[in-house]
Length: 219
Image (cartoon, rainbow, N blue to C red):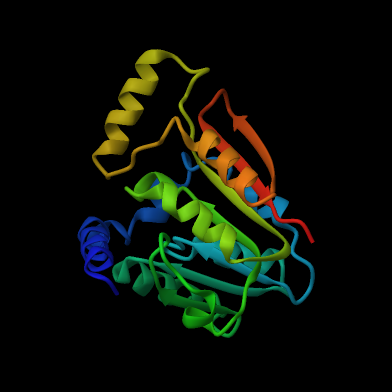
């Protein structure tokens, strides 16, 4: 890994060295839209599904149960999170169906990580807001899509339909965990879609609490 990637990995390891043990329990009720994203993916049997920033492996386990014939892969920059993910996947009896690796969302190669040329479905769930150079992660993921593939994204929105006091408190709390939702997400996605001749679907969920987006590559 590059020096910048190693620095980012060490920072994430520091944040989640202990939090990883309670991450899924404490995030269950406010990472809204994750299951809707998984439901919308609908990979065909045998297709490759990749999670960028797989964290504890929670989403990959859900995807494996929902799509038993899909080929599932995931990577995260944090080795601490990957330890938890591997343990959770093994407990679920899915270690033969889900392959993990350590990687950087802003610079990765599917072939180097997994010996797979491209992915039919890629998803990023509440990870972009934790990546300082998040703008680089979107075209990187789009580049890894196979023809006809889709990139699904869910993350914190700008809380535009919620009370100002709630947004202020929520964003202040998120910042304690180095989470910074960007008001520029939709614009960046539109730029990537235009540059790559892709189609964009963008929705604001729960009064702006979360943003849900899909970038589709032509067949």
